[in-house]
Image (cartoon, rainbow, N blue to C red):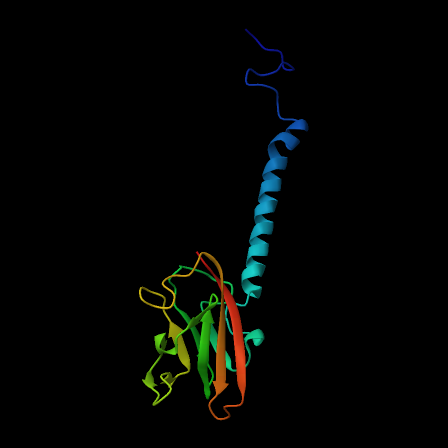
Length: 167
């Protein structure tokens, strides 16, 4: 059987202008959405305070752990890295005051009399666990308050605040 040149093929009509909306418009919209999501994701990561020691923490703080806004396990260590001549005098994590003898300094030595530990590097850590002030953090936002003091001028004190998410 011969076919007329203007007849439709057996597979259906030839693509026309109505097919653009049906075939290509959804693909373009999805692709454009993915590109926008990638751009906003990139901007969010590059503009975030990932160093953990921005101006809002103060010049006496080099960094905090976990990073500001980070998502961490419920038993993640919490710490602060201070600049030279600054020391930690108190730490409150999630509303619970941490005893100074449970805070471990990096390369530290016990201080005679106060029960605290003097650190050589200005880094102090608290690690939750069994028998500690906090065994594990509650799921959700956990805020930390660190009280610090200048070793050269004990009247020069400051408070450092930051929050992370325990998950």
